Image 1 (spheres, helix red, strand yellow):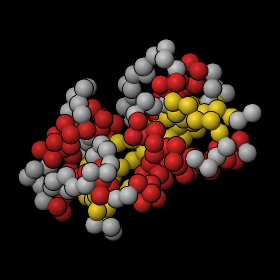
Image 2 (cartoon, rainbow, N blue to C red):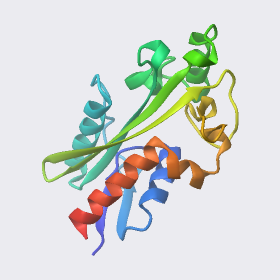
Image 3 (cartoon, rainbow, N blue to C red):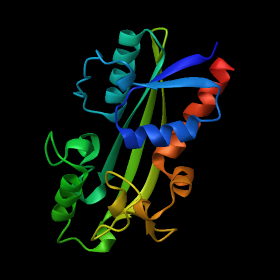
Image 4 (cartoon, rainbow, N blue to C red):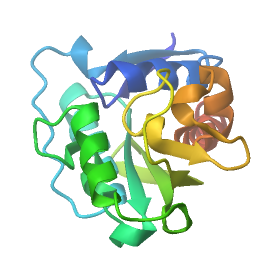
Length: 198
């Protein structure tokens, strides 16, 4: 019987990326929408690690299955690491991707390209049998002055990879997955899971 793993997210964009990254493992991937009564996890920790572990633990305990969660933040040097852990709700609790991007660009509107460095960090937490493990991926870049591209989500349209001279939103998904913070973190998780389960 296939092992089951719950992805601790209802974000359709994340689910597509993660399923692609873990697709070669002989496991059944479920997500929170497969459990209609699942309570929402409040992300109230002050670190990416804390939120990722909390989500994975609560969802594992609710479903009785191993769970994996990630928390991702964009950390901009000029903004002292903001939006960081608040990246998904930078412009407010009900903010859209566009709202968050617009707030970020407004905050940086007077800043030259030489002061627009930032990094994406993705922390993946795996929770099984009462214990949590984490892995991390990081990607360094520069915040664009205006959005570019339409392939990504979140802050992808304003995060430039200098070595490619493209934003994540200008890249094909496979290219993005091969170099992104989430791609790196989930490849590390993939290796961890292969060693544990296979």
